Length: 267
Image (cartoon, rainbow, N blue to C red; front, side):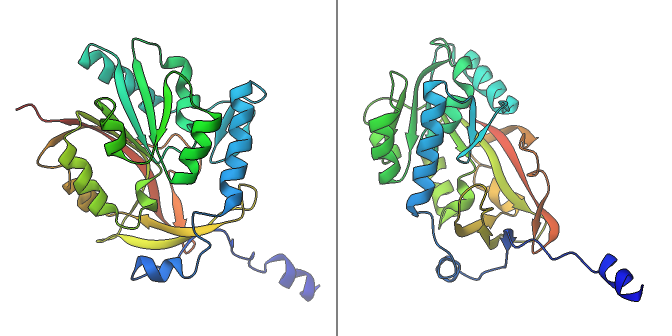
């Protein structure tokens, strides 16, 4: 009987997947991870999105196939609002947009009156795969922001679940602001209730794919400071993804994903 109660009330083993640590540098975090370049990540994402493109499946997120689509309604709202404000169709830059996951997720809303082009800027192996398998009259892939600008202007930049995976996110944000794009939508971006940014390691659940990589959680005030001089924060919103509104770091519920809609100030 005593053994029974010991087993019954024994603490459950803590989850071994999720976000862990507080690393002093990107280099040290990388040394403890697999990195973003594992071939299995691209391979699974490609296989899933080919099913979406062919109509065999309805919705993909982070390489996982779902039988019911979840719509990112804040993103859709601000895309439509931006197009209405501009008065003509938008040229959208989706920075770190994988193989076009968000494009396929909201494609039915991207009428010719709303979206003139959707350019994904990604790592070279994603760009190569995207050009070969997923480009259409609207969706295109490029290696850099500058490459897109050489073809046409950019009206709106989408940053969805990407800034926290950059080695120097604040350098990137400063550069982004310097371009002066009219609209910026930041979605599914990680923040922490701490006085400064926190660099963790994300150990991905095997049901998604086997990988681990560095992942930032930002101090919100410091993050938004980059936009303070040039942009107006029109709206902020919680994530549409279940399980991302509260994120555990080292098993403590101190992180969260959220988003912002920013519009450049008028001269």
